[in-house]
Amino acid sequence: MFISTRSRYGLRAMVQLARNRQGNPLSLSGIADAEEMPIRYLEQIFGRLRSAGFVRGRRGPGGGYVLSRDASEISLLDVIRVLETEFFHTNCVLQCPDFLLKEEESVEKVPGCSREDRCPTKKLWTDIKIICETYLGKNTLADLADGSLEME
Image 1: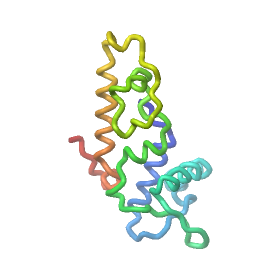
Image 2 (image 1 turned 180 degrees about the vertical axis):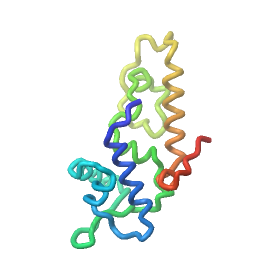
Image 3 (image 1 turned 90 degrees about the vertical axis):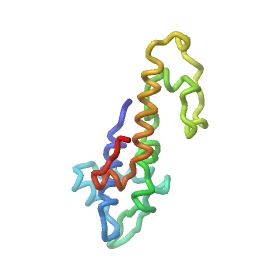
Image 4 (image 1 turned 60 degrees about the vertical axis):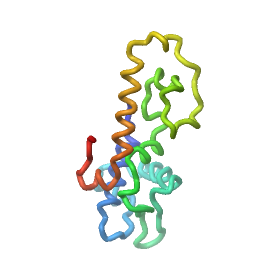
């Protein structure tokens, strides 16, 4: 599994928005300064988040970004799926159509591995992928912002 800086920065920036109880737009430069992130990279991340409908922006004085919906309605998995190209980068799991989650059925299936029927680690990688996606899917941006992530 590989979590890029795009997801790490994106989640940290989204937490800033979730913790913004006044609801006033936060500027990207303010978020970038507070989280010690390059603003240019943050602009690219917010382009993806805006396109996915997680944030909306306001231009002009006092402008910036706010969440498009309540933080409790945004799963961590949803955010990571928008920001990552391949969240679980294990070729054998990506190649095995039996283990793609329902949300991923639209993903182009790669021809199966030649060792699929005798691979001792296939179940391990598949289980780890499912565990990670289940954990991220049930925890929300509000959970992350409040420090109340749940394992079960």
